[in-house]
Each structure stands twice: as structure tokens, then as C-alpha cells.
Length: 218
Length: 375
Image (cartoon, rainbow over all chains, first blue to last red; front, side):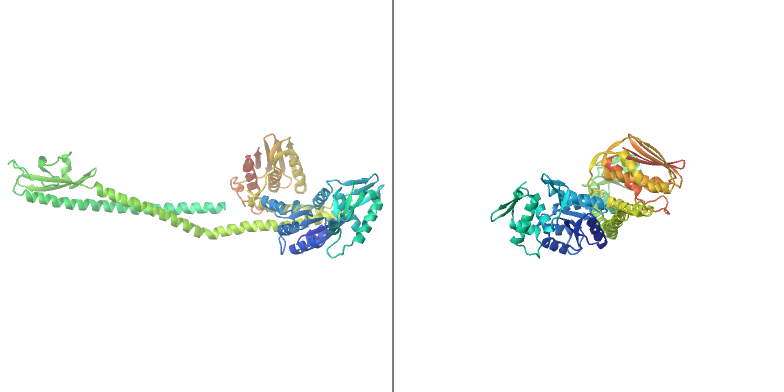
């Protein structure tokens, strides 16, 4: 399940969006305040942030700017400010998309998917080997069209590999992607995840780069 | 801020016009007075000169005895019974001897006459008043210029002071519209997405009439506020001009208004051809929506709407009457105050037409209202 952060100070609007996105198989965290949004974006790993602009304590544009100091996470602005300048500001402050209110939930869903797909070079499915397919929109892995169960951490790890095909990922990069702020990353558990993934998608797909990290071979 | 500028210009015009009018009346009177004063002071000087001349020539009779008069430095002419006797100049017109004084160009002539037993003697002299009058005019000119500058400066300051409360109100009204537009969007989003979510969650209400009505009303509120923000930000919005199918958009919008049309049981007579126009789609929708909603609103139940889309124009004819066509094109003016709305529709149509160089006409003929936009 992909994890999204929904930052919107109107509680009703926020809960409705969260409820809808949960139906669409996203995991969501609702935040109502600008400063809290920066903190939680720092502490936890999300796939995407929906960000209102008029927020208490810190305005959405500032929130985006601060998040950009430590993360490249996709940000979609969700706001009623709809002038030329507002939209321009949104993109200049690090937004990836800009949706103006009133909007439809379906449109929101389509845009979220479109942005998330970009992480995987716009592909909806990735063929890992002959019979193993990864679906980028719902992060599921299938072997001969049958679902393969993966833990949340394994999904995160596999997604990270698929987003960085043929690139070396250092252990630190992997740790910060799959572990949250309050969790203790350990080499031992990472080795367990890697081994399990190797079992499923093939040993040759994930190379160990000694003393550095791992590399996914496409 | 256009209203404020208009009022400011009007105020300046009235204030400056009336002040300058009063000023010129004052200057005119002052000029007349001073002109007269210059004449009298010259006359009194000339009187003295003539008296001096008479005194010097006391024993000469200016008659037949051929003795010449002793001329002083001032000009003099002596006439006896209208016959020139002696002097330094002659009058061009003897008739002027009847006057006490007269002016010719820059010269002021003064005539002194005495009845002697040997006839009527006229002593004429003149003095140059041109320079004094010129000085007077010069000073008045400078005074007028300074006064006008002063009046304009005062008018400007007063105008700013008087119009400050008005400009504050306009500013806060515009801010209110901007804020209200933004604030209203969140609850409207809430209504709309909850309807959308409910339809997804509870199939039983998927096609519910009641939900459709709530949805339409929310869209209407949203439209009103979008119109308001269109006015507020009209110079500020990005226009994405493209070649748009007007016929497709028109059919889509008619579908959008379907429930309103059905509710009023209106009969629609369509004659739609394929037309493409270079326009921003949002603006086209705004244009069509305003024309349609206006026509629907002002047509009585079971009335007829004729919609024609041809190569060069879109025309909507509906039953009804407009008393003052010019007036309804203004902002916040409605033909019938008992009807709902803000009275922005036709004003917006006009604005959009202006942006794209279209012409918009509104006619009221034989209980029919014809609104037409020519591309």
C-alpha cells in the first residue's frame, strides 16, 4: 500500500479525501497544520504529499520549500488559490502538480497515479522477469498472474530498486527510504529482506556491492 | 479601482471648473477696475499738463494774431471752433472733440475745452497707457497661472482626502470578494466530493435526483463565486487560447443545464452547426453558461428557447422582455430585482467579448429577448 500525507486544515475535507483514498487502496495520514506537516514528512516515509496552501502555523508554499530541503517526494498542491501567480508560485516552491478547488475525487486519484507513475518512468507495470510483474499503481507483485505476498518493507525496498534500475543504492539510502524516523535500521534485517526478494525475483537481479550497498539489474 | 478613478476625475473636473470660473470672474472685475484707474490717473496727469500749457500761454489768444503758442514737452493740439490752430499733432477725426477722453490703440486722448468770447477753444493732449495696461495684464497672467496651479493642487489633495473612505471601501470589498471566493471553495469542495464519495460507497443513491440537485446547486454557488473572482482577477488569469469546438461545448453545457430546463419545462429549438473559435475553453464555458442561464432564468415556464450556432455567431432567443438593454449590461444590475442572482452574467459576457474582440448585442423585440455574440 502506498502511503500518502494529506495536509488540509479543513477537517471534513481532509477526512473525506482520506476515506476516498483508502478505498482506492492508499494508506493515508491526515495532518491539519503546516509545521506538523514538515515534521511528519521528515520523520516518516511517504510516496506523495497532498498540500493545501492556506494552513495554520506555516503556509503550504513554505511547507513545500522546507520539505524540498530534505526530500524529493512528489507534492500536489490542493488549493482554492487559482490565479496565474498562485499557480506559478506553487510550482516555483517545489510543487509537482496543482489542483484547484472545487475538484473531483476521481480527478485527484488520476493525478496522484500519474505523478506516482513518473517514479517508475511512467510505466504502469514493470516486467521483472518472464512471469513476474510489478504493478506500479498498487505496488503489487504477481507471478503467473497470482499475487505474491510481500511485507510493507519488502514492497518499499522493491519499489526503490525498480525506481533506481542499474544504479547502486547505498545502505544509508535504503535505510532512509524503508525505515521511519523512530525505527532502528539494522544490517541484519536488511539482509533478510534482500534474501527474500532474491528468492522471489531471482538471485541475479540484486547484486551486492561490497561495503557500499546493492544494485538492481534490469 | 476604475470607479474610484472615475469619481476622482469627475470631482477634479467639477472642482477645477467651478474654481476657475470664479477666479476668472474675479480677475475680469479686477482688470476692469484697474484699467479704469489707469485711465483716471493718466487723465489727471494730462489735466495738469494742459493747465500748465494754458498758464504758459495765458496772454495768447490763439486767434487771428499769429502769435505762436509756446509748446511744452507734452504733446498738444489746439482747436478753435473745431479748426486746428496750433500744436504738435492733429486729430484724425474732429468729431472726437465732443468727448472728454477717448482711447486709440495705446494712446489715451484727453480734451479740455473753454468757452471764450471769441469762440470755443479745445486743448487736446494724449498719453501712452499701453505700457501700464501691458504691466497689468502681465501681472494678472502670472497671478492666474499661479492660482490655477494652486487650485489644481488643492483639488488633487482634497479629492484624495474625500475619496479615501470610498477607495478604502472598494478595496475592502475587493478583498472580501477574493477571500470569500477562496473560503467558499473549501465547503463547496466538501459538498461535491462527499456526493462523489457517497455515490461510490452507496450504489442505492448513485442516480438519486436529490443528490443531483444538491450537486447542481453546489456547482451554481461555485459558478457565482467563479464569476465574482473572474471580475476580481480578470487581468490576472492565464488565457490558454486554442481552437475550440463551440458546438461540442454548447451541447455539453446544454446537458449541464438539462435539469434546469426540464424543471421549467422549456422547449428548446436547436440549430447547431460545427463552429471553431480561438478562445480559452474556460472563457467559452463562462460565455455560454452565462448566456444560457440568463435565457433560462428569464423565460417563463413552458416557454421557448431558440439556440442558433452558425459560422459567425451564436444567438439565443428567449421569451421575455428587457426594458433597458444598456442598463442590464452593467455590473450588479438585474432586470427584475425579485429574481435571484448577482446581475453579473451579461456583464461577464460583455467582458469576455471585449477580450476576444467579439461583438455582443442584446435586443428586446415583440416579447422576445435576443442575445447574440458574433465571433
